[in-house]
Image (cartoon, rainbow over all chains, first blue to last red; front, side, top):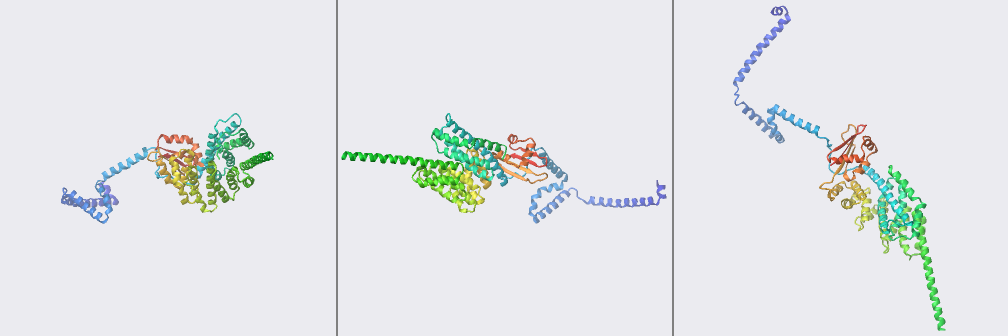
Length: 239
Length: 287
């Protein structure tokens, strides 16, 4: 191998460079040995700690808010420990997020809120339901009046009067909604029923047969019960 | 002679009495028939014809008890005619002021005054709101509640907020579900924080009332496109009032309102996540 080296000028130059590097390394190694011999290894940790704390104190004088992070100082000296702690924290957080099921969104702000547009839709839905309810209850009252004109009322007159008064109250609230949401057909029929109930609400005694007959013919002439059923069907299938 | 005079006086007295009775009978028939005709016209919303009959009744038979009731129907006709709101207001107020006014018609008149005042306000008469405000402490709760409800619909938020105390009282004390829901929605409009306090104070609600929360996020978006926090009592209504597309997405995934409510009821902290085909995420939960 040495023969080959001597013959090849490139390898000869390379071997020379390595030889020089080894000599320089030996020189540095001897300097390190000298320096290491001059160090007092027993007192060195205390000296480093003092200097480090003196540095922290100076820094905290410059920036008081940094005191809050003083508890982290030991970790600066022990990167492995800090790394371990950080790993534990991140791992625990990841486990919590992964295993917590189902997850609740972050924007859990406190009070009630709803947009005006949503409230309009809610009122429309409410109008639909309440109109249906109003029409159904009205149907019962009208059918009872029909019974009265025939074989006799199921409902005492005073109770009928009270029921009609309740329905009149409901109708007041419906008016605004029926107009706002353009439920014209429902409004027309509800208005007709309202006029009739206005009369019935004032009568808390049994009506004479002639009067009942008149109301019955009024309802029949205007086909109120049929119209109620048709509007109900429309409302049931959505406005 | 004395006998003849006595007989003449008796005959005269009888004759006059009969005539008076006959006249009264004719009047009863006439004012009654006028009144009945007017009411039939009111039923059919023939306002002008009905008003003419009523005016005729009041003119011809001012002393008739039916003339008192006719004043209420006059208000109805004027109100129905349109453009005569102030005349209608006057008619209703006159009726309320009558000693023999019927309680059920007085209640109706109060409601009509509130409606007319609201219409006048919408047409630009701010002073008309005083009619509604003054009824917020009306002794009849039907009138008080209706005034609060109508005031909550006023566009001036400051004015509308005056309805909050009465609406809160309805939420706290009323049992009628329809009235309760109306009051809740009205409070959500004018003062959501008052609704929260009222729900919390409501007997049986515990320290804090349960709340339904809905968030709808478009695909890839962090901020919700739709956000809602409402009392759990309005849950059914709220889910039905969602946007049609969102409702369709929910239905497509096999959910209906009752299934959603059942799933949410299983655990109050659980969250229901429904992903739409377009990537929309609907989150519903209760706490």
